[in-house]
Length: 76
Image (cartoon, rainbow, N blue to C red; front, side, top):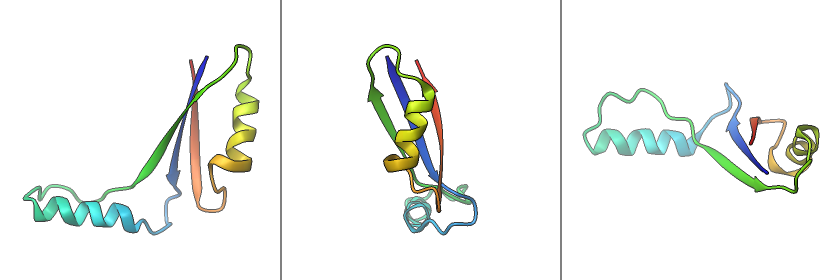
């Protein structure tokens, strides 16, 4: 069983990494990019029967900073 957690900075939180990527893309000639948000994807290999509520608890306690980040969970 797998879970994929996508963590992104919340709207309104400054994203210096995303801005650096946007600037670098412009310097490489990709002028059509108006904004970039940097995030992370965490893939978890779980034992069968692990609930989404357990993965949510993992996110709340360790994988995401609830003050500045939001996350989504996909279970497969």
